[in-house]
Image (cartoon, rainbow, N blue to C red; front, side, top):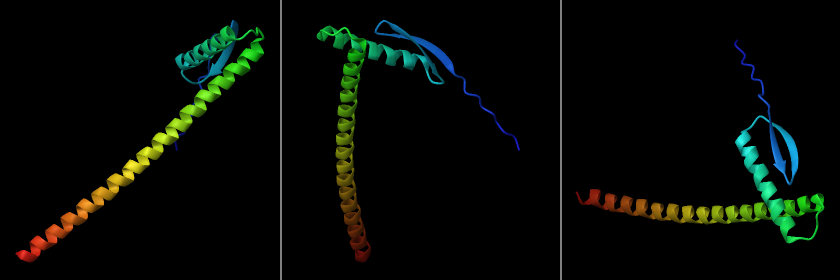
Length: 114
């Protein structure tokens, strides 16, 4: 028996979020991590420009709340789209069943005539 041993190729990527540098270890896509860090940094800067606080922890918590809100709204939207898709799928299935039954009846009548 041949066993394949796969080692996790952890990499470290340095990101800057709200003037702080962080080293993040990941076995994932570094570009993705950089995009996430840029998003969080942008959200924190957006929050700090609209508030009077300079406390980075408070800014981070407010940014996290905004990101959580975006996530939950996207999740709700996704659930609504899933429900619409399920409803349309059921309608299509019902319509297809009717067409197939009609075709069966017509085919049976045609066979009886011959």
